[in-house]
Length: 151
Image (cartoon, rainbow, N blue to C red; front, top):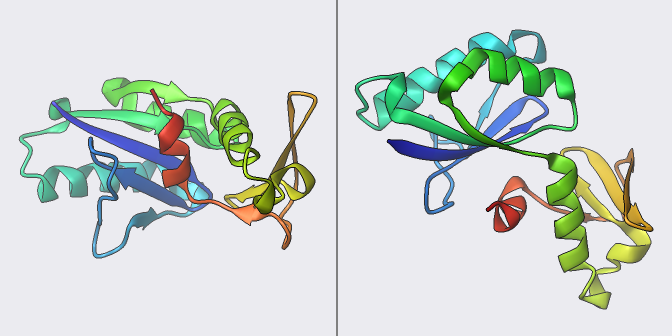
């Protein structure tokens, strides 16, 4: 069984190996897709993973998925992959943990400005996660930052 971590972002999938290192597909650390063709892109991604890792088929794959803030994308991906998903991680839970950890460093001003992830800004107020438009003052993070909190 080959295990991959996959982050569903807007128009991109980020793929990481079992050691949580980026997997490059066609020379990129991400795989781009069009929102209205997510299922087809997922099938192409799976084929590329199988080819590049010399796997005999889909049954050798397991995905640990960091979900997107858009439930429709999450469900489209889930339907396209079926039983290949071993576990799904809520984006909200991972962002709360990330914000909490980063806020320990006052020089980052996380409490004041929040973090940017996937084109949106996230803050926690009284334990609740809020989402606003992208902020130039917030700290921008990539999906690999969330992997630290995936168990």
